[in-house]
Amino acid sequence: MTEKAVAGLPSADFWRSLGYFNLYRLILASLFVLLAGVFGTTLSLGARNWMIFLAASEIYVAIVVLSFVLLQLRWPRFAIQLALSISGDIAVLSVISHVSGGIQSNIGLLLLVSLTAAGMISRGKITLFFAALASIAALLEHSYAVLYGGAVGAQYVQVGLLCVSYFAVAWLAHALAKYAVESQQLAQRRGHDLASLSEANRLVMRDMKDGVLVVDEQGAIMQMNPGAERLLRRSVSPGSLLSETFPVLFGQYAMWKQTGSASRDTLQLGAGVQARLRFVSIECDVAHGAVVFLEDMQRVQAEAQQIKLAALGRLTANIAHEVRNPLSAISYATELLREEQPDAKQQRMLQIVLDNTQRINRIVQDVMQLNRRDRAQPEVFELGTMLRIFVEEFNLAERLDPGVVTLVEVHNAKVSFDRGHLRQVLWNLCRNALRYGRKLPGSLALTTSVTDGRVLLDVQDDGPGISAEYQSRLFEPFFTTATDGTGLGLYIAKELCEANGASLECSVHEGQAGACFRITFGELQAGGVGGGHGE
Image (cartoon, rainbow, N blue to C red):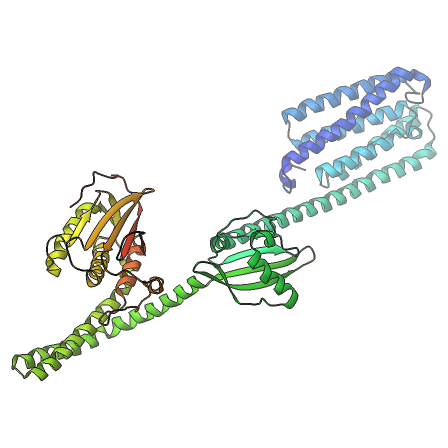
């Protein structure tokens, strides 16, 4: 029996078991020496030859001590050490049994303990080999006693029964050890499966976008994923009571336990945060409770909006060519009719036709840009230099007087962004600012700053500002308050910012009139912040 054959457990367990067995042997050998030293020949132990009994006991102690040394060295290998230990027990105990009266001394019964230990430690059929050695030793000892010691031949029956007990105990120990190994292997497999399921459950809960809470029957929180922490805006430790940490949610949970359904499907968790509630009961032998699902309604609405816009983008891409060709023909025909110098009424009608064809063309162009965010190619550049060039181009394109667009505290900070995308975002924001601003010197201001390692760019106008009822809908596609607008400019600008790791939001500054849109860029790149100066 080798260690490789018993690979069901770590080898340390086998060495530890062998150590305990050697401890038992040391106690037994020491007991023999103690009895021989204290009681001498007054006991039946060593009745035939007390000197040989004492010598065998001392040799037994020496053998066990040597076994402890070899055990610490882990040499030779485990199977050999076990075989030497059992063989030594068989030899020494057979000698002690002979000098103590043979089969009548019952010393041979002590080998049952050694055989049992061999079966439990080795967990193999080699125990039957040790039982055979013990039986041969018992038969040889009694035969020698019959031939030279005057023993009774009829006692062979007792010796035979002892030999049978050796094999029975050896086989029983082997069977029990085999069952123990199989049980331990099964427990290890179940433990591995449970650990794998637990890790899979942790990963699934961690990566779920919706919030998940696991509560027991008393309403104590047993598990909570990051999605729930984000929606509930609070992290709690396992064991916290739902009634104390999230009373609103606990009220719905209590209602569900009583009636089987919550009083409402959606729950207002904070400013602008709504979640759809769903409870799933946990019913098993060891636990009762529920799993609470919090589905982020904003995410659901955003995903639905993305699906709608993606379908719209594909549709527009397919029909753009067919739409633009008729528009081009209408525009060309309108221009030709205007050259024939019609009367004022016809001129006005032709201008209406031309304006509407241009508006339709702008709508097609804006919708076709909805998928541009997937083609972002960010690069690192100095924001201040880019803004100065943009202001010059914007002034020329819009035919603005110098000073209408100003740069305030522009830092030479480096940002990572797609230049084309940033140019389009700024163009949309500045055109919106001009539309509602007064177009006076300083009406449109571009300001940069650095906060917490992030570069901020503010686009501020001096218009009437944005009412509270419109602020929450600013970035919705197709939402506009202008009669000639498409409602896609701000939405596309926000999408392009997010595609480049930035964010766009409407920022409200106390004491300032007009509207302010803030671009928050990603982490500040190497290069830092240079000196600021205004223009």
